[in-house]
Length: 159
Image (cartoon, rainbow, N blue to C red):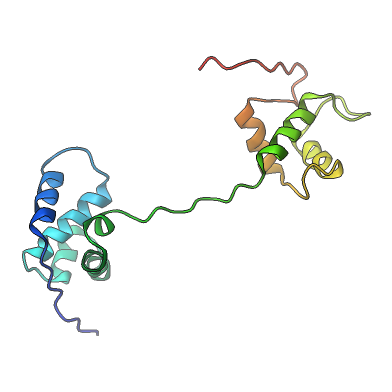
């Protein structure tokens, strides 16, 4: 069993005001409100294990919120870091070339385009070094194309 030293946390006056305003009303994500409650209770001198039991987090999570406040301030303690997201798989020029290929007729011997055929043909025509079916499916969905239908009419959106 580990014994942790008590986490002493003193919030700045401005941070206390911001937390009080945030916790008194308005719409906030639940995890942000929980982190705000954790910071207020740590400021009031409660132990991490005590706070954890009240807000249904682990003591480790409570200590981590306190540590982030001490090191980086209120915003870092309340909000997660921005995540990088998925890497873009196709450059814009590659996307445009694939869309142009799909808008033209299918290869000889084929009645219509399929997602598998588009992926294979894009690699064969050296539009892209490699591409997966899901990437093609998402590209077609984003452009509102359904080339596997017999009648495929591309129209401008009514946005």
